[in-house]
Length: 210
Image (cartoon, rainbow, N blue to C red):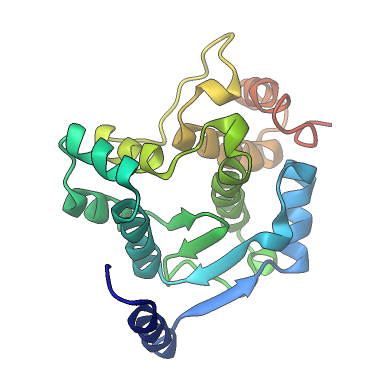
C-alpha cells in the first residue's frame, strides 16, 4: 500500500462501487452505547462500515506505514500474511474511529435487530474505539491488538482474577468482558459472573452498573 494518494482514492471508489457502505451510528445504537460507555466515548466520531476485507487492508496499511510497528513485527518474527489471515476470521475490525463489519454481519441499524447478540457485538467493537480514543490512558496500540490474535489461540478468552483491574487485562479481553456483560445483565442479572464483571467494569464505565 505504498501507492500515491490519487491511486489509493481510486481504489476506495472502486471498492465502494462493489458494495462498500459507511455510515454514522444510528440514534438507537448511540442510545445503547451511551447507556454503557456514557461520556467515555465520542459516538459522533464513530463510523460503521460494511466490508471486513477493506478494514483488514487498512490495518495492514497502518502497520506498514508505522516504523515502530514494523520494527516490532520484525523483532517478534510475525508474518503480515499471518496477521491478515487471523483478522479475516473475526466478525469486525476496528481502525481508529471506524468499525469494519463482515458483510454478512453488518446491519443498517443494529438497534433494530431482534437479537441482543448483535447489539452486544457493537458494544465489543465500540470498546475498541474507546480504547483508541482514550489511548493515553489505556495504552492502546494497533500492533498490540494484532499481536494478541497471533500470540493467543483464543485472544478473547479471559479469567476474572481477584484484584486485577480492567485496564490490566488484554485489549481483546477487555472488549469481550463488555460484550459478555451486556448479554448477562439481561439473561442472568443476578448471576455470579455478572456481578464479578460489574465489579471489574464499573470503575472504567460508571454508567455500566446502576
